[in-house]
Length: 434
Image 1 (cartoon, rainbow, N blue to C red):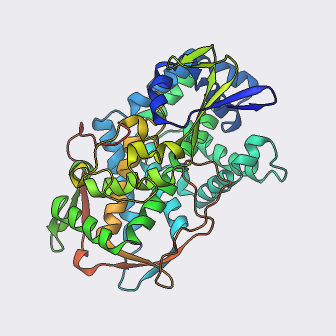
Image 2 (image 1 turned 30 degrees about the vertical axis):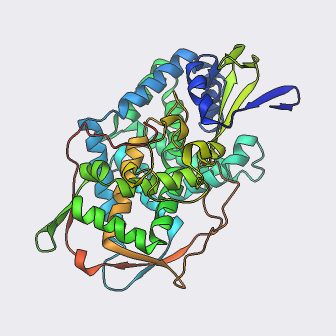
Image 3 (image 1 turned 45 degrees about the vertical axis):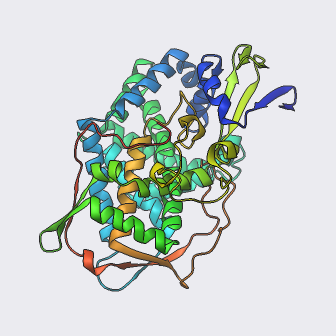
């Protein structure tokens, strides 16, 4: 426990208390921080924040969870996402010459474009490079803006560009729009927000959509392509299980099989999350709460749950918990299944990321297409071990401090037209978080 100017910060560093925190979610609340998000990220006035009552926040959370339930509408989102991912990967391998690019920069562009096609429709605001660039400038200055020390105003000016674009978009929303957008708007409209205020809050939703997916994709690419033996195994898994067709007729990537029958590529992604996740979840103690019958948390103080010690706890992950093991999440390789409460990459129950399956599918599609269709190596030929990370960004996985310049070469045996088959609507991938 830390005492900071009279306010206590209780710290839980073990997964064993996660279930107890979940059972006490009414008095160990995340809602005050959702209001802060509406104010600090969404630019909401005091009047706007007051409209985010507990009832509205509950409705908001329920609407977002329901919007990402497996079914035809989520399939349509994934189709748009996947088709855009095909475009961005195709642009890397248009001829036999290797393409040079900055890996983080490309990952950002690929995630923004694919995610926006899925969520906002194919005519989304981030097709404008000015808007996309403004978002990343806003993200880089977000910690300054939230702390009220954006002295130059650069972050706030960039946010204004994003918000202006979202206001134009929300004034004439397209038909291929995801339910999460319409449902969020419905809840805010019923709460009394103006159309401009709604558009601004939709603009802040982009932080949730982009900020953490990008480093997850970047580092999973890094971990996979820097290990030739692992890369060969992942390629074999995908090509023998999830891909059909030929260069003469067309290749098809079956996304349902990718999600459910390709455990190694998912294990690589989840191990990347486990090793690199740095976020600490926080709750406000709204009433005196006896946690697990042992620890009394007093009203008005805060509880923090840092994920890194939970993800390195040897009683759960074994003596090699500090080592990257790409097979860790594959029980058939000798690893026992771990309780969902010990894997906090997508949040701490009951506040799991509602879009975690959508984001996972996005990463798996991009990663699978890159693994099968390309060779990626850094300029100079060797991957840097343990690259330095940017500690100043508000993300759950740190971005690299310096981008990595890579060469992308197409694999000739996989040249041809490519398609995606989304499969059955109700299929869920086996995420460790549940």
